[in-house]
Amino acid sequence: MVLQRACWEYGGMTYDESDVLARGRYRHAVEAAIWGMPAVNYQLMRETMTEGATNEFVYWSKLLDWRNQTLTPNPDLIYYMAFFDTHDGPVVVEIPGESDGQALNGSICSLWQVPLEDVGHFGVDAGRGGKYLILPPDFDEPVPEGYIVLPCETYGSYALLRSVLAEGTQEALDRGLELCRRIRVYPLAEASDPPETKARDLHGDIVDTTIPYDLRFYELLHRVIQNEPLLARDRAFEQMLASIGIRKDEPFDPSPADVALLEDAISEAHAWLKAEYEQSFDAFFDGAKWFFPGRADFTESQRDGFDAHPEGYPYPNRGVIYHMAFIGIRRLGIGQFYLVNLRDSDGDIFSSSASYRMRVPAGVPVSQFWSVTMYDAATHAFIRGNTKYSVSSQTPGLATNDDGTVDIFFAPHTRPDQHANTIETGSSTSFELMFRFYGVGPEVMTKQWALSDVVRTSH
Image (cartoon, rainbow, N blue to C red; front, top):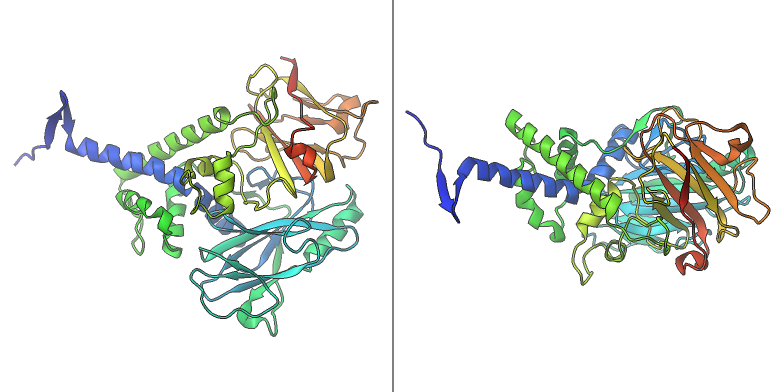
């Protein structure tokens, strides 16, 4: 018996039923990838860094090098991270007060990268320290006094804490590590006699959490769905996920044909994210190529948990941001602010075979430090094999011009007289830049002070 394929005509076109259904699943897979990006970003970091453990810290005891293949990390300070799980009840995070001129800047976020609160110097504790209490979804029991309470819509959450160094010396690094070692995390149920906080040093390990644009993406998304409630704002995605084989309490077991469809879909999602990232953001300063990779609707919605913004749910822009970075900041533009640049003054994408000069204007309005960091544009991580990744106001031997400006060079090779001020492009094909402001002065956000373009100096 020969099975007949169902077909029909509409508007002068003939449609094959199986092809239509496959195209529908393909579209769902593309959309699910864009929507699920921040959760996959979180899940990948959690699985890679923690080896399955929760409520303990991982850290890097030295400044980061290329073995840290996280998305757009900062190589000029100390990173302390922890992943929390409140399935068994609330979790306490104790942030110490500042000492010895060392400061903590950080945030605690849900797995959807929604900032629950900023902590440390520019956070709600204002550098005095405090006990933060992360509550599980729908928690309705009495909360003891003395805690900064953080209701969370997901069981999974995490913290990124940065020990901001007062200067670029080993002594400052050691003091920063000592401050981080005073951070504690434990279940609220054990608050009367807290256990020792475990911490693992990842310095020297290869930690790759760049987004995988293949079947692994959907495998990670499936594991998120198994452990978390689907939020009310995301109910529309439940049937999309089911159509590509991602259902709660069911295994993810795509056929070979489904694997091919999903890998094509994630490739298209990646292409869309890349195009949006490269082309859709307005310049932050008039006449310059620097931009913040988030629109106002995203930053406002993220701060409020994406549920209350009058212009809707900006998950596409959220996907763009979290394909190249991680963590959410509740008070953006106070403790930290970031600008990205992909193009030279002529509007051309940076080429790693060419040489460029960036002139940082005098008087950068920061109370802590500024830096510019180079990343591989293909991965948004450090260029593998490089030994230098940034130039900052704390770079030893930094050359400053007579008028207070600083010239920074990006080139395949460093000239001997420009070593402190140069970042090499290494094995990359194209690169991107991120300029960081730590302790942001008001002149940045009001644009009374502005970055200038990067100029190509050779081909």
